[in-house]
Image: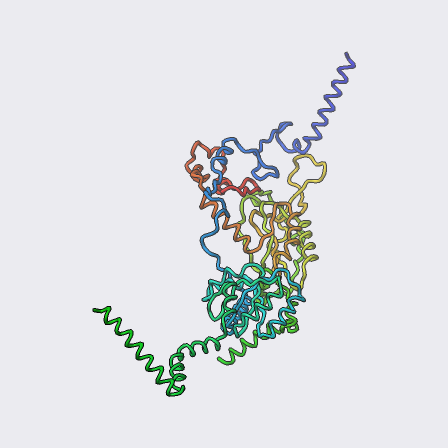
Length: 265
Length: 258
């Protein structure tokens, strides 16, 4: 018992000593201060973690969330009404100028589709065409379409689909072109614009079968002057023959008049 | 008129003369035929860009030179909320914008300076600080000290950064793609969320927020409910939240809030 009391007293003395060292600074000042001091502090507004939010504030934030405007039609479903005007690069403008010059200078512009023709075949074809004065031109379809859209030749636009090549010449030499194209099976004639008239492939074929301008002119002239030439040739014959013919003609006229008079009465 | 025509014709022939050997009836089969038309983007013109004399980032002191440094209270509100200033570009084209609040200490600043100075090309681009050097003293008590005994001694200095502030600006004869990888490297290491922006993208961000506020279909807004103290929410909403419409909480910013 005595032993325990000494121990407890020792412990309390030790605790007092500890308390004295802790509150040493405090007890130096005059007045008595409590050993245990409870400090009230509020929580900080700026914390490293996300602070727990009061349920009412949570509800408020949930109610006042951002609601985006509803889109009846999802974006990209329909094309935009406004046509986006794309500025054409100067290379495209250059090509368009060349095309304009081409349509002005060359009378025949034929559109041909080439499917996998070799460079060698191309070269031989070009050589053959060059002999007849036909040149081969390459233009991108995009540039072609944008040029044709604004020009007079807008109806040619459906021809320029796929790998197309232009055969142009100053003189409309359709026959030579067709003969050279027949030798190369890869090239298919799609259409042509000859003398500002659009022709299909069959149209070009029939155009080629037409006789040349001189021949046609000659035929026309001969047709017009047929009567006068006939009379001229007749007059140049022997006068006796001429007189016999004229008498025959008069008889015929009279014989025709008589039945006509009978019919009239 | 004739000079113009000559120039035009000359220009045309000049263009055609590029592949002169490919012209003519025999050799023009060597032309490469393509389905479409290759259009080339014209590169940007940097003739009006002036590079400063010292293009690299300046060294910033660890400690401001004060005769008597005073210990300051914590004032964590210098991190709270959006920036008051320095939220737009001055001379640069691309930069890093803070998407949250935080303190930048000298270690961060050195990291930014070294990374950018090492990776950038001083001949074509320049970089600029948008923040001051550390000026706010942070005190620390020594290890093992118990509570009490006054405020600790100044340990180091920091720069407070708020949401929306630009940290560093980069400009010069460069495009965003050349600078982005450098700035993203830096932005990942910052103590707050940050993003690489250009002038246009920063404008777009601000415009997006304004558009969201305008075309919000929700008939109930934070401002309206709090101003009328509906359901007594002022009890749980602080004056700071009232001012900033619930878009901020401490140093954090909520991007979806309007």
